[in-house]
Image 1 (cartoon, each protein chain N blue to C red):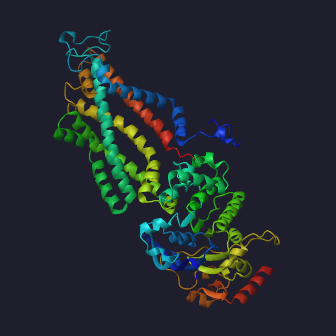
Image 2 (image 1 turned 60 degrees about the horizontal axis):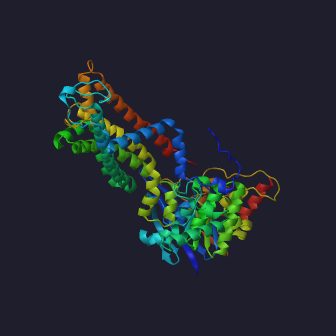
Image 3 (image 1 turned 90 degrees about the horizontal axis):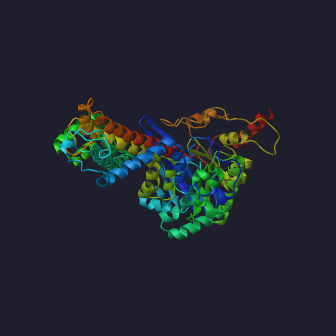
Length: 296
Length: 334
């Protein structure tokens, strides 16, 4: 570990200043090269997802049947599929759909999880018991099965998939938030805040939430790729996004049908899928190191 | 009577599934305006719980089973949470044991110091910042304008305790409760903090309760000393009186286990045995009896009341003080 050069020596304040909590956290994060690489890739993924219509060179749902199964070339970088659609364009759009489900479900998960976890942890008592039993029941139910039941009930469009994914994933978030809130609520600085005359709302806003959020961000960073995974899995077995809407799941399922004659149809989506999930995971790892460490 | 604070027959217990713990058992004392009282006792003697009940900051499983706490003529035990909040931080300031644990790690120190002003809407945020910087300067933090923006982890323990004192004092409370304010600090820093507390108390027309397990600390700062044992007040006397004429066997034991700077070099005498078990029911008789060298038949049957033995000097013990002193003289000559 590199020691600060100022260890033991009192630097004049003009030199020693300018180190906020967040700049400290950024230092820890940026030391982790894999996490920084992951963050860059995630940023790239988000940009591609947002600007998909401008980035995709061809429409995702139309192709020229005469061009079917073209090997990768200058016109179609990743080749074309069985009906002559551009694989790159379909990948870009499947990335967009994965992001919509991944981030959208995470947003629901965060909202519901934060609300339920914070209420359960902060109020405690019977409220806590009731809410946590609900969480236990959802947690105990096989989550993929629940998602399947939900998409069958709600339809196979992207919104239904999003809700189906969020419906099962919020429980983990609620548990983490509850645990965090309970720990912070019992901490001495919350006692101090009460002794200074803070109201419960001020304590929640100024003390409990800022000190609980670190692990919440980490769970969210790991939650997004997990949501993408569920979306792809649903689509892979034909229950998620329906053709011609592209999804990693359908792309991979199409690709593996032709794996011996046209391996690129399977390789490109799987490699890109794996890379995206991996970069989210590394980003989450880096966030955990930076946010969870208690600086003394 | 011009008592700022009067605690009368306070009983507090902690309730859990495995039974009740009787933390405070009929403690009484009062504090006049402008005076400092020191509450002394070993761990588990109920001193912290007593002062926490004054600001009604006990944990949820605590239950005040009886008594009254009159603060400025009002019984705080009967106030609503909302009324209580107006008192906390504004009329009663608190300083705690471990400054590192009592500061929010995610907010710059200066912002925390000004918080009581904002909680009670005493002034604008800009004015609060000015006053916080002024307060930080007053408690001896160098270049407070810069240190205002620093986070707790950038402060040393002693500096952080100074900041905590600034936070407790910024809204000009009439009563400062300092709960073991020097226990977590280095000895050299301890003296500075004590000096600061004393100075602040004198210049700001404030009363103070100092909770400590250290008799020396209490003797340096306080006008009056209260000794607690097993959640009861066993002796209460003006500091000068207490040092010369302490009579309760527990107080005598405490004094004997405190090193003297200018006395002859001698082995410190620990008090044999351990503090009473306050779970379940309280034992009959005096709680100190099992450890008391002057124990009599009566001590095991009846609990001695707190009685005035000299003006303003109260002791809860059956033993005749002259006899007790005599026996000590004998035991010390051996």
